[in-house]
Image (cartoon, rainbow, N blue to C red):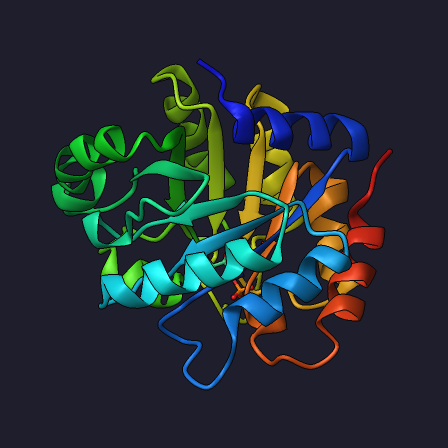
Length: 249
Ligand code: 1GP
């Protein structure tokens, strides 16, 4: 069943052609204020805030960060978990994701087995998503023990994406890893988009309106950026420029 947050995302995608989502990582934000970043990002036109990170270690930090964000923003707060530790009752929804190209069953299904009862107990809206890591992979690739897909093999990304869709997942996330030197190339995005019917989320290494626009033009339905707004300066302007660059409608 499509919940409120998923509907918001789908409506926004329909309206704008491509939406922007801001990732904040409570673990990385020592000294930085996630809530202030989220507040400015919303003013810049971001459609949702994603909270999580591959190395998040303290549940209290996550809970506290989400509560602070909730006080400041109206757009939905969606969990981007690295495992059961990334589940918080305070969020509006959770990407219920499986790292499909992991070599370790923990990231494909075991973490989800532990998390699902919690998601149910908290009444969180779960949005099923296939998560696929390509290119450099960075921390997410290392922690998630991904068999990284080389950018020269878009057909592998197509296969994983179609497998996700065929398994009933309602979003696909093509990830290059936070801070990746090279974002997912337009050729790979285009090859996946050509075959996929569910929305395609793309992230990792996107730092300029030009790169965001290239991903959008190639077929991304949503662009995620994190590193771009890790520093608290000019968040609204930086996000605003990206949002403008990716709009297709
Ligand atoms: C990481 O794709 C996201 O999961 C964001 O990456 O930090 O490089 O924007 P960046």
